[in-house]
Amino acid sequence: MNRNIILAMLSRIILGAGMVLLLPMLLSLYYGGPVLSFFIPAALSFLLYLIFRKKDISPNDSLTPREGTAITALTWLSVSLIYAIPYVLSGALSPLDGLVESISGLTGTGATVIDDLTVMPPSILFFRAMTHWLGGLGIIVIFVALFPQAGRGTTKMVNAESTGPTSSKPLPRIKETALALFAVYFCFTAAAAAAYMLWGMGFWEALDHAFSTIATGGFSTRNESIAYYHSASLEMIITFFMVISSANFGIYVDAWKRGFHVIRQDTEFKVYLAMVGGGALLITASLVLQGHMPLLESLREALFQSASLSSTTGFVSADFDQWPSFAKFIILLLIIVGGCGGSTAGGLKVIRLILLFKCFSAILKLHMHPRAIFHMTVGGERFSRNTVLQVLAFFFIYMALSALWAAGMMFDGLNFMDALGVAFSTMSNAGPAFGQFGATCTYAALPDFSKAIVCLSMLFGRLESVTLLSIFIPSFWKRSGW
Image (cartoon, rainbow, N blue to C red; front, top):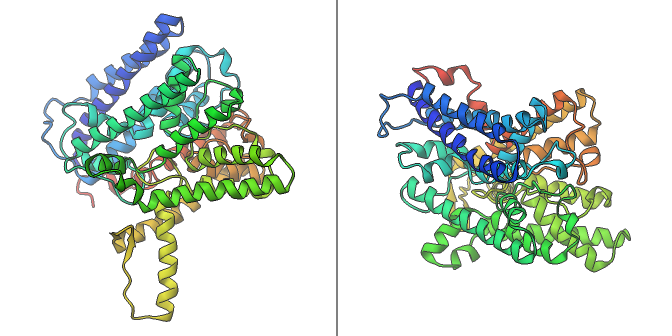
């Protein structure tokens, strides 16, 4: 392992992350706000760049898979720490709370520890939403797309950050792929912001919510989230953008090259749409039969919550914690499954769920026909045995870590349902949980040890566990290596 190339690449990404802080700093200068809170971490990023940069490293130096994994994991850890500084220096949050807010923003979880957003300056609100946008598509992907000399072998970094069992690469070169994905991401964000402004939001409020929607993050400028607006039309607009952001962004690039039929024929996206629709209908039936609200209102609230929580955005238009147990059970399932691989959504991913069902079906068939040979295909794409094994391993790791986080929080004093809800919600990067940390609540009441667990859970969930688990293996850092 070449540690010099790791430090060199890491220093460039940290410099880029620091430059981004100049945007909320300019907003603070214009509107009045904590200017130094953004200038100091930006200066620190530049200093770290000067310390860690390696002049003898060429952009043509290629990365190994281990180096790509190390850079990705260290990038997320270091940027999370740097982006916690503005919250602390502005006096808004304690160091631990600042770290929770920073990681929640970057991972697209949207779980906040700020009890009252109305007292926050516009620059802090913009910064919170901006962290969603940076982490949604991926810090590494944006770095590769925008930096002129990202270096060779960056495919390993992008693969370590990407979500889903396979990495979508609709274009032959990783630089072209990253740029195309960023273009789609930018256009969706601009379209969402324009739609929100046409609906009646101000520019900054619309932009903040657009960042949160397309990144499927969930930070709002209002304490009540989307429930503040009491608008069915706004909820339907947001639902549309949450749903399209839950699809694999690679299919949009592919559709631009080959036509709209690519989206219509994508099996994973069709299953996701069926899951959202089916979840909404089941929740509606539960609400109506239990007499909670009329049919049309039930359908409206159920559809928005299904789209929001399946996409792991976490916007809320109603207090679903007051809904019947069956409705909350459906919501929990939607949170666990999440969106499509290659999207900005979290969770297990729909493609993994499809492969798990196909694997279960193959096991039953093998029991009846021991000598049969089965090929795992989804939408005409064949998945190797290695990929299927990775899916099974990921499912085990996801469930095992969720149980571990829940056990840690119960040890810290949380009750069973609260701990379980927070564990699954943070591992899926969804945000709202149940009970004390439900739709209308924040994570501010969590004990300090539980907040530390939540930080780990959100990072492991966003990087899909393996990337972070790898760096804790001692042999990973040996020069001779694997």
